[in-house]
Length: 194
Image (cartoon, rainbow, N blue to C red; front, side, top):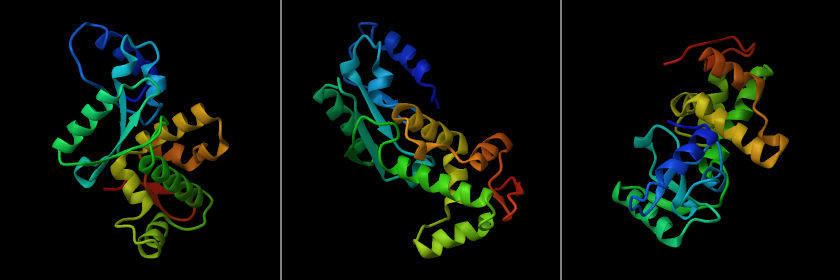
């Protein structure tokens, strides 16, 4: 999965500038907005972002994120593509992460803050959200499935594009990424899960 916005811009600059016919250039827009990814593309009107999280089999919804230059035909082609894959779609704004991935990353980030601050163990944080908010699994378990690296890239993209401190990644989330950890006690000691 290509998350680096600079690499994506370089790819689209070459790919959509080849003269080959295209209806849309789809890009996973988690770490940067579609508009930012389309900067420098020969055909920014064909760049359309989408947002979802792993695992794909668990996601009914794919969010379509048109950039400021995305042509209506490119947006329609993106919607059709995902509908043919059996997914529902929703149109959201030109932001990193869309709606579901953005809000989910914030919940995981808060869970990581709580874990790092010793508020509760990872298991108890997951139980609290599973039973208190009817999550199918807790946020730390779901974070393992989505990938801490993906969630970190999303938070960093939101922080970079908005400058808003609420998107600052929890130090414990950074350690989860560095150490591949996801579960542990209130002290923050963790071990690799699943």
